[in-house]
Image (cartoon, rainbow, N blue to C red; front, side, top):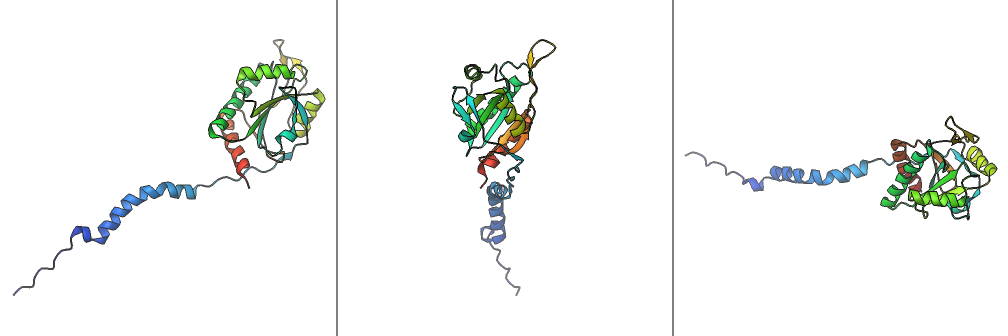
Length: 214
């Protein structure tokens, strides 16, 4: 008499099949979690230099300076309203930063410093900035005595500022940096960034690293 055939286990009772099914379902669900845990958040940039205390005059004719900015992370640039070379691009790029910070709800301030304070009165800065679409709750434009501006830009921001002169076309020109400067809550300079789209993207992210640093 032959032996009876061993009964086969139903497929739904096979633990290996269920393990495979669970794996197929679980792996896609866990992938975003794993990526977020493995993503490296860069450290904030190192301190380059310390800004001195300063006080200038903003677009409303009111004192504005380091007392107003202390405790805030902010980005500065140097411009003047009659500039026809790099300044329009600098203002447009700063506007991109303003909009990106607004969309993300990030409290980072912006500061534009006039290198032609003899021309750029508070009233002129106000009119110019309003035309550009500036949000004055976030972005101030400042002017002041020429000697004070020069000391701040050269001695404080560690960058250059030329003398006012006329170019080949008879237009006023003042040599100044086209880079953006990132400053932390304690008035420490944390970086200089190009004003092209790549540089704007970098300062946008790096400023948040500084903002979120413990």
